[in-house]
Every structure is written in structure tokens, then in C-alpha cells.
Length: 294
View 1 (tube, rainbow, N blue to C red):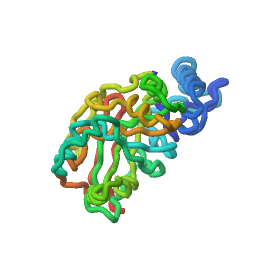
View 2 (view 1 turned 30 degrees about the vertical axis):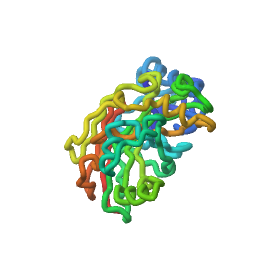
View 3 (view 1 turned 135 degrees about the vertical axis):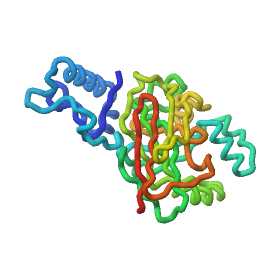
View 4 (view 1 turned 180 degrees about the horizontal axis):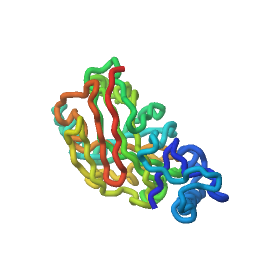
């Protein structure tokens, strides 16, 4: 079953004896009992509550056009973003006049982003005053559902709650400067990450699904790829992070972008005020954001 649950969209609080947490963060942290309650609420809303209202006259089922979806997570425990696609990694090395570092093939490489700067679908993203090279990245986010430590890949797969589309906004001029000092990215990424429009649970898709991915700018397709082509899978990434440290519920793991899933891979031009970026992933919907002046 695919559970679609976003803050601001209620399934109905008065569905018999069913009680659910009010935020996705608390919902995920509550573990399997919360998911079971949600599944029961969906059954009630679509079967017993055939009229689409509860005993108090409140709606149980909404048409998507009737609601505004917020980011399904606004205060996750952490944000890690990987570089899991070899074609994008090799292109980056080539731009620097280098061969791809062998370390990339030995372990999944990631940076830690700002988990308190999450934007949702259809939210305007401001161009930071410090950059003249605003970019996006087409990614899939994996959300952790339970705590693990020192996990193998099978245990890591079982810890996955679900998946969503992710846009890793990037200031490429600042990123180039930061990484030339052999650290980062930091300021070049921390200003915004978009997530949404909803989370689809792992029981629907599996631990590392093969999903078609597409990125468009102002309606023009700039990238078509597939998550299944990533060199590193989410269970591998999660297992690696869990060695010697605890992985927590609501942690977000970004896949990184496939080649072409950002304007950097196309040598620009970069985004300007008024541009609309739309990311689409098979089964995960569409994540759309317009760029505005800060």
C-alpha cells in the first residue's frame, strides 16, 4: 500500500478508535503501530466511510485540487546527500581535469546539509544574494523509519520508511570556491532543499526501486534518467552511515543527481528569477518550485 501523508492534509481524526500523530515526524517516529493505524484509517475512509465523511460531518477524502501540500517533512533529524550516480561523478572530475577518485568506488560519499531549511512543493525559492549561479539537482530522497547501528544491507533496507522527490538547490560559484579548499559543500547548499510532494512507503516500492526521473526548466526537459542506474543503492548508503553511529528516524538520504539532472552538467546557463523547475519521478509525483529574487 502507498501511504500518502502530508502535514495539512488530514485523513480524519475521528475514524472510530483510530488515533494518529499530527505530524509526519512524529508519525514516522511512532513506528509500525502508526502505519497500521493509518492503513486502518484509509480502509475506513474508502470502504466503511463510503460517503466520504465521518460521524461528525468532516471530510475524510479530499480531491488533490482542494488542498495545498506542504513538505511532508519540515524538521527531519538530519539531511545527508550522496553522489550515487557514476556519470555525474565522472563529469565533475572531468571538469576539474581529473580522473574520478578511486575512493568514490570504495564507499558512498556524502555531505551533511541543512535539515532546517526544507521547502515544500510550489514554494518559491529565493536566489541568495551571495550567488550568481543558482542551480538545482534532480534527486530521490530516502527517509529512515527506525533507529539502527552497525547494520548490514538487509537490516538497512528494513529501516527505510519511504521515498520522496528532492531538489538539492546549489550555488555553483560558491560551491567551487568551498571545495577548492578541500571542504564543503556548505554555504553553497545550506540555504534550501525542496522535498515532496509526498512520501510513498517502501512497502510499495522496495528498498531501491528503478524509477524514471525527469527534470524540466520552464517546461523544457533537460534530463531523463532512472534511479536504478545509481552505482550506490540506498541500503548500501544507509549501512555505511550506520557503521559506528546511529541512524535515526526521519533522517533524509539524498541520492545525488544523475548526469544532466542539473545545469552544471550542461555548462549553464544558471537559473534566474521567474524560472520554474519541475522534477518528476515515477510513482512519486511532481515537485515544482519557482525561483524568485531574495
